[in-house]
Structure formats: structure tokens, C-alpha cells
Image (cartoon, rainbow, N blue to C red; front, top):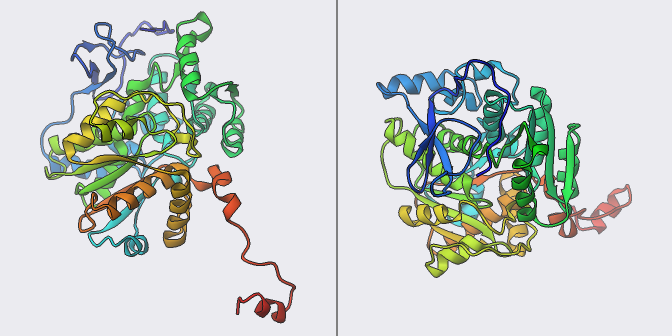
Length: 428
């Protein structure tokens, strides 16, 4: 396990609010809070353990509702200090939960269909949530450089968060990412490094750098800070339930890249139930992948517990992780809740992007097209019940993946500046 030494003050107390330590998801071994991500005994992944608030749920609910309109309204449930809202941060979250009635009619959904639209975050993807969490851990552990391995959105989120907080940033991406994501990651002034290979190659390189003196003092948000980083996705669950009037939706459709977002949304729902903030009721979680990178979907359909890696080949590059770290846990959750994992073709992804734009005025990137495409496929197959409340998670903005829709999207007509030409084009 790669562990770094970082500069600390003489006060060794780490203030991360209600976080009490780290716990191994496999063997249950516990560790002190620190920049570690794997269990020393079984090499299983670590996650944050808490001393969560106890007492009157109504009082906690009111405390949350009186908080800022960003993820820090949930500070009592997150690994952050109590004064987190006063520190330089991008303050993401509290994005719109759109009641998608037009889309519902198109898909034959009668029970209520919602889109959790995270394209409204500061860098226009949900990655701002997880980076905000990792940044607070990086502060606590004395890191000076913020880094990551990324398929695009995370690179931009890290660059922006580091610039705002006064950190140096150096992020690593596959060399062939969409140009929009490359520009958005580079514009913040940090170092952006392309790696020849796919995301899994990039991630392996970052793991090597952590164990090398060259990486001393670096906080890799999705590697050595991964336990804290992942907790940012819980805020999606918190917001969805609060925006539904403190109710758990019956069905949630979530994209799968590493799988961390899906597992943490489930963790967030379970915490809300435990705290008495929502009623304990059954819910189903569905995972969405692109056919060209669908290792979890393949395992789910085959009834396997092991996820076999794949070489990605899809336009949904933000989901193109062929060896997803949380894949086995995604399988467990989808099976436990009675959900499923499904995949769609690149053509279906593009069709879904256009469908969401045409019906609700939301321009999603390819990850959101994958999620809606899977939702549509499962509704048509009778797997998702159209009479129940369903939430589809949109993780990013379509302006980041223009290449996906550009070949089939453009001007309806080119006319001369007169009414006769307008009529000749059939537009009258």
C-alpha cells in the first residue's frame, strides 16, 4: 500500500468533522484518518467511518435546511470541519432536480420522472462534489499539490478547485480525450499531462507516482484521497431526497465509470434512513454503461461476482474505465435492491442526448446520454416500473462532448434573407 509522508504541525489532530476513522470494506479493519486507501491486512478498499449525529431527526433536518445552498449544508454528515463553508472552495451542489414531465410522456412514465441535473456545478459536472471533499482532506493532511487520473471531467474539477484554493495542480489524462475537456482542464493554469494509453494506464501511472519521491506532498484525489473523495457522491443522494420532500425515490438510474458514484449514493440513502431523516422503504438502483465499455453490465447479466476488465471503445469517454474499482460492489447493490445493470450502444447514447434536449431543454454529455439511454431501454423492457417515482442522474454538460452529436446536428436550412426563401424551405 502506498503511503505518503506529508508536512504536519505539532498538533497531530486531524479535524474532519464527524469522520472517526477509516474502515475496510472487505475485512472491517479500522485505521486512523490519513492519506491511505487500501487495507494493510487484505488490501481491500477503505472508506470513511463516522460518529454521525444522534437525537432528534427533525432538529437535524432543520439544521440542514437552514444551511448554505451547496453541499456544505450537509457538513454534519461529511468528512469536513465545521467551518468548511468559510474556506476557499468552489462550493458545488444543490443542483436542480428537474421534474421531467415532457420526457415522462415520451417514455410512458406515469409515476413521476426527474432528472438530477449536475451540469449546473461550477465546472459543469458532478466531479466538483467529490473534488470539494478531497480538497478538504488535502488541507487536513498538509498536501501542497492536487492531482488526479481523469477521463476529463475530474481534470477540470481538480484544476478549478486547486486554483480557487491556492494549490498547485498537476493532472493526468489519456492523450486522446475530447478537445472540449482538454481545454477546460488546461484553462485553470495548472499542469495537464497526456498519457499515451487509456484511463487504466493513466491510473496505474498515478499509483506508481504516489510511491515515488517525485510524488511527495501530492494529494491524488481519486487515489490516496479516494476514501474522502468518494463521500462527495453521497450528497447527490442527500439532495435528491431533500428535494423530493425528504423522500427516497423508488428507482434511481446512475452511470457507472469506476462505480464509486453508485455505491456512495446507496451509502447516502442508508445513512438518511439510519438518521431518521427519511422513511425506510424499498428502492431500486440501476447502473448504466456504454456497450463499448460494459464490464459491470456483462458480469451482472452473466450472474458473475467478478468483473472482468475490458478495453474501452465508446464515445462515452467519461465512463471508459475498463477495470472499475467498485464494480463488484455495484453488482452487490443492484442485486440487493432488485435493480439491474444495463448497457446501450453509441447510437442509442446519441439518440438519448437528443431526446433529453428535445423534451426538457437539458443538453447532457455522453455519460448522461448513456444513463437516459439505459433508463429508456429498461422502461421499454418492463424492468423499470413506469408507475413509480424514477430519478435519472445527469452528471455533466453536453458542451463537453460536442463531437458526439455534431455529425448529426446542425442547421435546419440555409435561406436567403427574404420571405420567399423562408417559404421555399418549408419553414412557414
